[in-house]
Image (cartoon, rainbow, N blue to C red; front, side):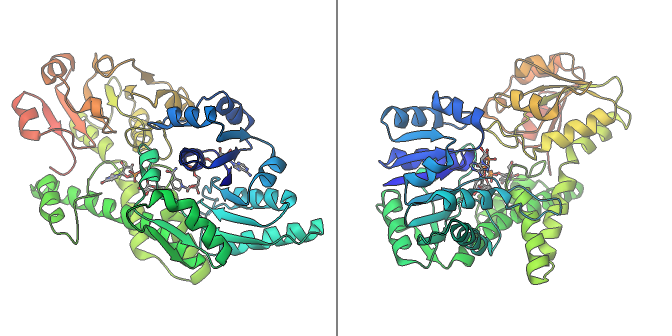
Length: 440
Ligand SMILES: NC(=O)c1ccc[n+]([C@@H]2O[C@H](COP(=O)([O-])OP(=O)(O)OC[C@H]3O[C@@H](n4cnc5c(N)ncnc54)[C@H](O)[C@@H]3O)[C@@H](O)[C@H]2O)c1
Ligand SMILES: O=c1ccn([C@@H]2O[C@H](COP(=O)(O)OP(=O)(O)O[C@H]3O[C@H](CO)[C@@H](O)[C@H](O)[C@H]3O)[C@@H](O)[C@H]2O)c(=O)[nH]1
């Protein structure tokens, strides 16, 4: 099949490339000319395991190409996917300007029947807005091409995006038009050979499924973070509590890891947007989600609190090594990363920070700028040299088994403050280090 993918960010580029991988011909459109120029050279602007090789392979096979030409993209295919950003508006609701601009672009140039598939995360009712935008644009053009709008939210995780897209748990398709449903079934057939994974719903339910999934996952994390803070005060060990409750299949082990707060481009913005949609569209106060959000805001300050308890309120003259800047491992994404709050807290208290991240340092320099007091190291051990203590904000694999003897002898104080619970407290303490994890 032929597919146009509008937006070449994490979702658009991964989805477009994976759809090309199974034999489709995919044209990716983006308004960012610099990004498209790099992609046309086979250069992938984001760090995502396995993606660059797949992009190059499919470009070489002639199945994947990139353009900034809206007309060419609208003419290219019946299936028009929208995968542009839906960042928070000033009031926290999802900003739909990019989605509606993409819809307008399709409508201005479409030459026949089109299925407009929304892959961006959008509030309930957005498909109706897309429908209205296209109808109005067609009317201005004086043309009457038929079209259908489908909701097909995406559930991939950054750092595992290719794997998630190629092996989805479920494929949500919200649609009512029979021709569109048949095309969606055909398109996703290669991703569900042994199991039926396509869940067909009405459009509004599909739109809400995406927010409900992210809100549920964010709730689990805030719940565990709160439980961890309690365990710490009561002398219990949250890791044992986690295993103890995870063994109940109704709870399960996944996504129960306490830490220094959830970040990324999705949970913070989607929880906020759902709270806003509920209030504005339905007059409902989402009390649980409001608590999830405020618990997470507080959790992002937990590491700085531990630093202050150990080293005092005034951190002038102190230097801290920080391992991990990205909001999670295997990505260079710094959006809403807990490390940003930690860096701001420590710099405000007068400390110096020497940070190291295996892949996110360029992105960190871009988003953090060069505030005085923040430096970057070339390696994890270099960051530790001359530091008063080691702080950990991201659970990269390379941080999991450090040489604790070297750490103890290099740090000015043998202190590790760990926001991701990477180590066995008994072992680390036996080796002569003070260890402050989350909830144990
Ligand atoms: N990042 C994730 O892990 C993830 C996962 C599932 C769903 N989502 C959702 O998918 C959507 C996209 O997220 P993302 O992380 O890929 O965003 P992103 O910011 O990485 O990429 C969006 C891209 O769209 C482009 N764009 C904006 N307006 C355009 C237009 N009119 N025409 C063509 N291109 C345009 C931008 O230049 C950018 O390259 C969001 O709604 C997000 O919530 C994201
Ligand atoms: O047990 C856990 C699991 C995750 N996190 C944190 O939660 C955040 C989000 O992690 P993750 O969900 O792995 O990454 P995302 O790429 O943001 O993916 C989420 O957001 C995407 C965008 O909507 C969805 O598609 C995915 O299904 C959903 O998992 C990160 O800061 C993690 O450190 C925890 O603190 N504890």
